[in-house]
Amino acid sequence: MTQLSTKTKILMAARELFVEHGFTGVSMGSIAKQAGVNHSLLFHHFGNKEQLWVAVKQSIVQEAQQQGSLL
Image (cartoon, rainbow, N blue to C red):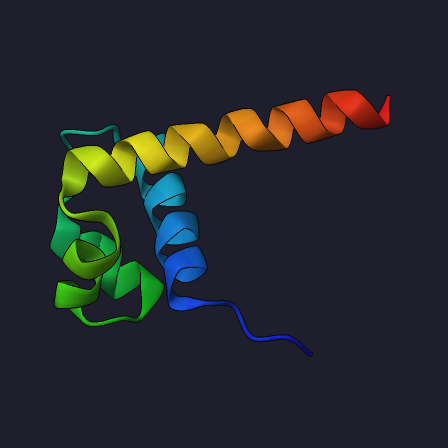
């Protein structure tokens, strides 16, 4: 069983919360809680909420591109 990196945990939690509540409905604290990590790690990995939002969108695009190439 592989363990997810902290950055991956944060991205997964942020994606889930952004989809459910939208950008303005989500706090960095709620993302940290969902990911099970210290709040300061979000800023260490992503800088701020906007950069995390961009990273989530980029991960969605990458997944879509990978799925498209499998067809």
